[in-house]
Length: 270
Image 1 (cartoon, one colour):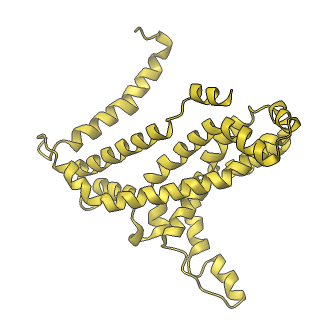
Image 2: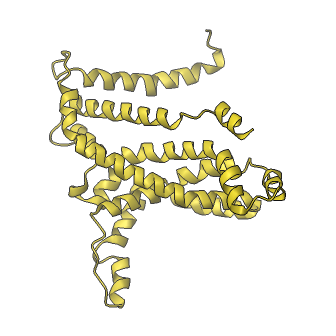
Image 3: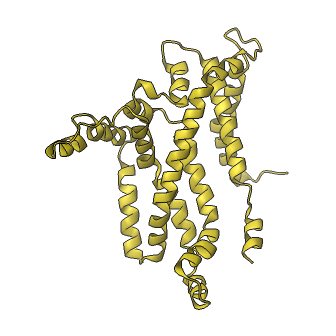
């Protein structure tokens, strides 16, 4: 299979920033400090299975919340005028123009014991409530930072659902609930799958959010990986092994989430 000349820059980019880094991860994961082959790093990665499961659990919760919150927003945008849809899109994207670290740091000021929320509760004689350094704060940070990645693909798919399709279902006597469940929802499945992947993948590997909002007691797998490369216990071989296990697990989840292809979807809808 010949590669066209126009694709050379993309092939070079893929080799330089995808293939080579992945190759280095695999190399370090199966070698020791002397460069000899070993599987000890993979075995040691198993010690962090509890942290990995907690990362997957919190990421799954965050992804589910993003879907529940983002779906009606995306649907409303797709049925609105261009001006209204553009305004909502601007409001969604506006926080993304700010640095990720600053956005997360802002929630620290809101959730801490002397933060804005507890000060409001204090006016009514309530609190202070412990909201910072909890798993709930980590989930909140994930939802806030990643919900645009759920809304955007959903909106992109829903805008392609013609109004005539919905009107036809209504003319045939379908209630609003049936239109949503039997017309809009099946046709928006590709956007749902894309949104789930785009939210879950960065959420499961995050470390800034857990460090700033979760404290030391809510470490995620991303924190463990970071410590192996930047911490005092510098061990890039173990860090690569944990990264490899996480990457394979994410690939497995992605493959499972893509069990229904577009051809099957069309067959089910006809």
